[in-house]
Length: 205
Image (cartoon, rainbow, N blue to C red; front, side, top):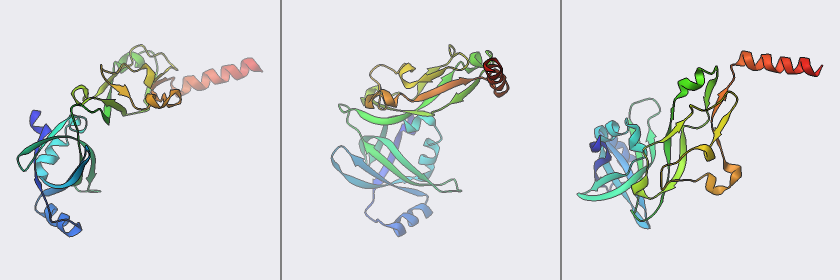
C-alpha cells in the first residue's frame, strides 16, 4: 500500500491543450502542484502508476510524496479530472503541505454496525459520504468511522455526534451550530411510517 503514496513526477514546460493531448497519447497525465505560497508547477506523471494509486480509497485522504525531478514534495490530491467514459485520468491537482500548517480536506466516512440498526427494523440512510476536516498533516486520518449501533428508529446522528480522531476538527462545525449537518438516519420502513401516521390521524379525529 505504501507505494501508492509515492509518485514520480517530471516538471513540464510544454503547456496548453495540444501538449496535454500529446502527453495523454504517450500514457502520461498532466498535473499541477500549487500551495504554500509557492509558484504553481506543471508536472507530468505516468498514467499507469496514477491509475493504480487512485483505485485505493486512502489515496484521496493521505499525505502523498511527489518526487519532482528527484526532489520529494509532500502534498494532497485536491482534484482529479476523469474522462467521461474511458478509464483515463485527464488531469491532477496537487496541493503542497507543510508539517506545521493545518490542512483542510475531505475524508471518507465508514459506517459500522449497521446490522444492529437493521435488526431494530430500521432502514439506514446515509446523508454524507465524506466529512470536511482540519488538522495537522501528521493527524490526517484515512477515514472517519461512524458507529451507528446505538441509533434508534427515527433518530439522526449529526456531525456533533461524531467522535473525531485526536487533533482533528470539523470545518462545518467551525462555522457554527447551523452547520451541524445530518450524517446518518435510522428510518422506519415506509409501511410502518405510513401506519403510524394513519394511527395519529385516526386518534386526532
